[in-house]
Image 1 (cartoon, rainbow, N blue to C red):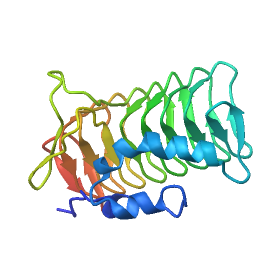
Image 2 (tube, rainbow, N blue to C red):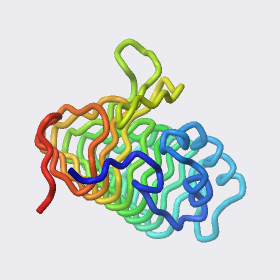
Image 3 (tube, one colour):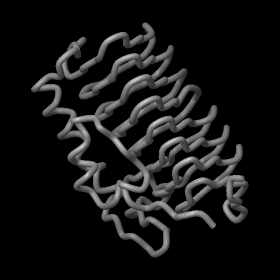
Length: 221
């Protein structure tokens, strides 16, 4: 079985000066989630060279395409060459990298998307971090709240008590989530791993794998 990725450094790499320090200082990715709002607010106040504040609290890079029916609530930072398609909903405390696609009826809230991430069709991404080139198939969801409302525990090589009530998912670089899948709160998908459509997952899944179901995982050949 391939390596089980849990730590921030095992899932993500970034040279983005806005995020580099906080990623390097965190041991686990859920430690970053409570800091997203402050990062957004301070960055908006300071500004970023080459970015425009298109409305109060919303910084946008060069060549960003925003459909007329997209909604952006501040604070939000959107990297260059990113596209927000009709009906996209940015619900505040969101940092989006370069070359991303936020599609029809996709909703983001308190989340970080690194570069070239695609959430193009009917996706929900709350309290989550998606690595470079991560992709979510149509209708796939990163659920961020347990039905009982208790704090999220990460189920990996051991039980990680987070102390956080809301945690969505963490998708390593090049992770690909199949259409119609639901990742329960605190699910982690390793780098270069593919998840079959209509999967319902909970826990942590290794890098360089194919997840056919929660109990059937094979190495990529």
